[in-house]
Image 1 (tube, rainbow, N blue to C red):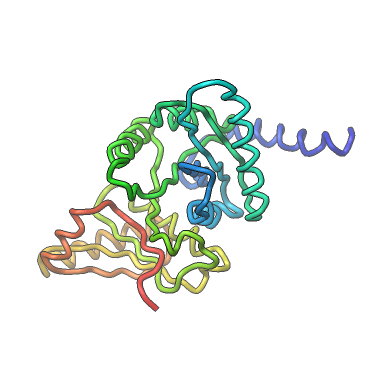
Image 2 (cartoon, rainbow, N blue to C red):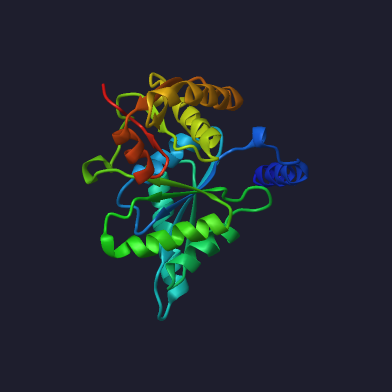
Length: 261
């Protein structure tokens, strides 16, 4: 067998072996589809995707070209080449994926359903927050479709000045949990983030808000069991007060990469 054929044969055998392996939550690995609205001018999505998958998962850098007209395949190939250059220039371990679809929601659906092979298919969609109010409706439509496709959605919010990350920000990794079913996943993602060299000095805090002091003991017991089940070392913080509970209801469950010095 020639040298060029050996990597293909190893990959083929590994994919077939993975296809025969039964899925189990303990075997879960992030296979991230990171979505960009343009030619990846900002690298924060790619950086966070890389931090979450490095050595443990796979990342696709993806783009939906909302276009019509002629020479669409030629333009798609050009955008894919730009993505390859971006991946090489940022020294990322990722695969490019570009689709042409005038409807953004259908484009995301195509990427989710068609990217990968066998057991290597996206299970997590990574997106940036919709800063433009005019795009908020479509942003919500995409989130609903991701939920219908039974994929996890991760949304990264970064101010413009932080969209070219050179290193991890300082502080703890705070997991603000609202009591949903994804607490273990959020802790696992925080743990994966903390395994990277840039994040190893960042401890994890699981934060939960209750309205009354008498609710604290029950919440602490419940969250201790969650951390034990997830097998992720983390500090537990219970925030008490009506303001805290109102804030918890107002926003999605979230992971804060930094919470101070």
